[in-house]
Image 1 (cartoon, rainbow, N blue to C red):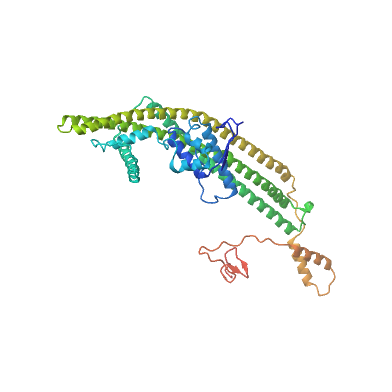
Image 2: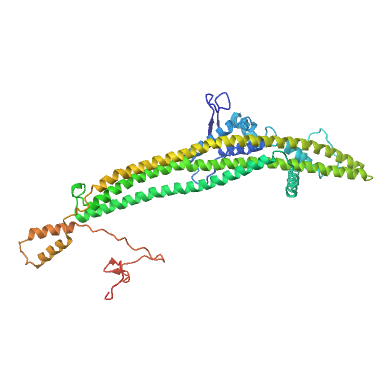
Length: 489
């Protein structure tokens, strides 16, 4: 995907034009690092992955369009437009970006100061009283391996401590908790309402698609009936003056049904692109707000865990101070307590920062979502109005034509008279001339009649075996039986 910037656009990030080539996996990397670098920000959704037809031209173009939408939303977000990962994504060269993507060689690799401080503090719980050495010698390869393993262990310990804090319910309370409860209730109610609307919208779109297909089949059926009537009555192709009433009626309705089928198909495409898909996008944005609220809750858990760690270390320090012979451990706990108190300050600042960011993002989301939802619903109303006006126009134009058809007009061909004429011909001696022209005319008319093949052939049996001409229970003289056998049969 090529990402372009235009210096004349109000959505431009850089004051100069920029163009970079990025894959979908690069956008996925940017999505993850935006969450890490700006916890609490509402990161717009990425287009979903697709397992089949990934290389079709239409799919590639559709994905490119939605990736551009994602990038524009990120650039227009005041909380995200100055992130380091975005600057690397858009402004870095291919080599620089690949290096940053491979080893996270920019900033803190997405980790906040609170994450680093909390990990170190919670790791200290298992190292109290242990002597530490900090020399400036170069680390060997083994030392680096131990350092990486230590960071992983620290992350596991942090996770265990936070889970314990969550289960115990010893969470810190803040003055704005009531506001966040209202925000959570608003987002959950909005999500439930949008899911209901989106579900019914999908059903309506599917119904309109089915209506289009049904109208097409209906029109074909009416055309078939019109042709059958023409064949039975001996009407020539294009001889509209001799069309019978019912045949002409079927013909007019079939032609109109075909036109309305095309109108319904266009309406389905419009509803899908301007109503159903935007509703799904609104739902994804609501989910992005829920993720931001979850990030804030994670910072609250981290802050609470750090406070609990300080209380635990203070208890341990008092215990070592009153215990003879434990002075050395008391010194180590004092150092650990000092780091824990520093971590509390960092975690508190980060928690408050994320909380403030979430509130700003929710306010922005409310305004933008209201405008977007208004446009979506207004477009839905316009689509329904345009569609039903076209439908009424088509059916309204048809009605005078159908009412103008003479329903009593029939062909003068009589099957009974034709059969009588043939019987009279058969009773005359060979070579009789009288009435020969009439009989020949009637015979020609009867021979030209092409009887319809209706009713349709029977459905296959339940066991999948089709009926054959040799089956006397379903066939009579090579013809399909459509009634129960008579006693003499």
